[in-house]
Length: 575
Ligand code: NOJ
Ligand code: NOJ
Image 1 (tube, protein in one colour):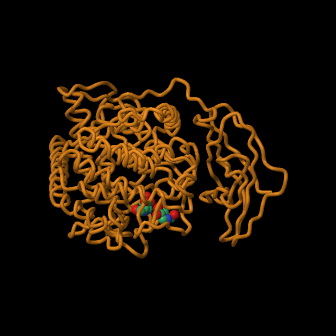
Image 2 (spheres, protein in one colour):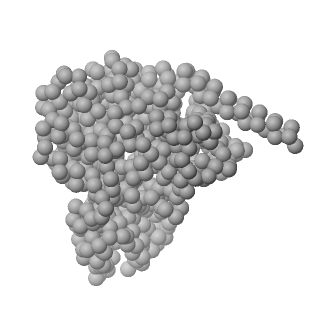
């Protein structure tokens, strides 16, 4: 008995050691490969990005199945935020030319008319462009409203460094501010409209998008005051307050996790939420739950639900202990390119945990609440709620457990990274072999930022320490609005789809051409969630589109009035 106990203790300790030494080895070998992998995918001289204009980031050099030789605003902005963080903290002073090329490439792209509109009619929400800076005009999930926010965040980080280093005040005001302002104005004016999520699949509201929009408007307001552009401050702040209110509504208090999208009809467990925590991490904000900081009880509980949702869906996870790291992907229901684990999703889990450790170590204590209890029990089954000082044995047990858990995720990526260190988009759920787009720029950047967090590196915050959720969340015009889920039972033939349009801007003002596509995930129920103004009389109809032909529902229009707050579900049958 005692012997068995000792043996299992030794096994545990060796397991943990194995994780940390394989993470150490992986960080050492993969860091230079990941950095080179990022740089190879940026024009004009990246070795794998020929044809890309200066400062243009290609998503991947893959040209078929899938063709990723395009530039996405999201990928580019996240990648450059990582490079700008390296530059502004002195880790790599050679990046400045590339960063300047990036900001001017983005300034050009902002002005390119595209299927989402012109610069002043919604074009900033266009998700991707050709790498020669022309519009991509094929069908796509558009708009995607996270891009402008992420781009503003990246460029503000650089602009703040320029100001702090006394060079370029006029460059910041005359060149960078107009780019930043276009994006922030777009966020201010459009955040309340539905958007395709970061995975380009669900048209509703999306946690990641809401959170990065909130961050961008907060730091944008502070930045604008700093450079004397005071006229925008109150508008940005008002909408940031509304965004923060709305952000709270994604948390599901009964289940204990964040529902990633208001539409889509899935479990809601999604890498979207983990990416939110790491990309809105503010080391000054402690474990604030309103902004879902990495060490907040809500974000930790959510992390456990998200990770656990993959334990039984990927066969490469079978046989792994229920409290150990596993391969994770975008969301458990995913089927894109086979629906496999994603390297960047695995890195994101590790990074959230490293970020949490940074804050606990800085604070000198760690809090276990009823919300985060199940997360912490993974590392100490007898732990109780309470605050544990860094001098306590419990603190040591829990933080050691979290560190090993985090290292375990890097060890998963290490195990499934091929010997040349290349990081594709996915790796096989059944045998771990790399799959889908090769050399995904975002996979490399995600590896780099997780390694930096493991090394305890932090970057400038965005004011998350100064925000509080307004006591009453207004839902009037300009307010958060009311999420309305439209469910309609409709039998369709293959290739036929159901859309909705109606008397609101958010319902595309009765336009059949821009009517909103419903999801058929729960066929024959078609579904979409749209945020509509409160206390408003709504009229709408569903339409069918088949081979270009449009069929409207018969009269009269469907109608109802939105309440002052809360949410609404409409259950209709096509007629
Ligand atoms: C391509 C998108 O990039 C990907 O995210 C999505 O899953 C597939 N289209 C399917 O919609
Ligand atoms: C598909 C992903 O779902 C999306 O987030 C990404 O922007 C594109 N691929 C390009 O990497």
